[in-house]
Length: 196
Image: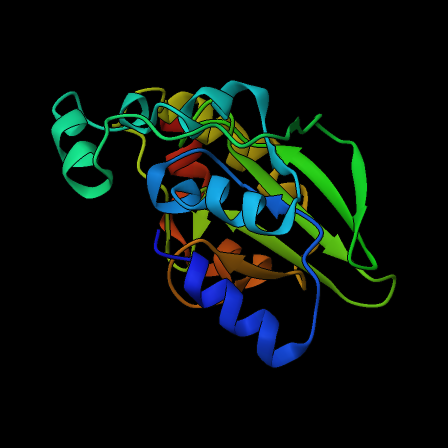
């Protein structure tokens, strides 16, 4: 949300050219300006097909009374769909900005939530969106959310990642898989078994 001016400033300061908008999921706070940024630079927006509809119908991923809130914020309950939308495929990799981006489908927060594992061949980072936070996980009580699916994503995807992998969540401070395995209550066997 409100990212267009920030993106413009950062690109101007760094003298870089954007190549794509990469979405970990379709919630409004992550994609509200996707269409504007994509249009400003003539670049595609990448999102999982299960969340694509949220690009233009953000209230569908929020509480039932969110339509008026979206309308108050943006003047309409819908947003323009970007001109060029491309869909992630699970376990595929894509080359952007000199990095290899591997997509790991991790539903639970939303049906189309993904983890984006970026590597330059030497160092790696995981963009976890709202699947994994430092000390917590994304909520599962909004439309499309599912605690059993989240538990499966944590067990079958997150826990298979290298312990030294740095994690950059969609909200809050950076962490690592190892730290979360050791301290995050949602990655403990008792929680995962209870919610499977």
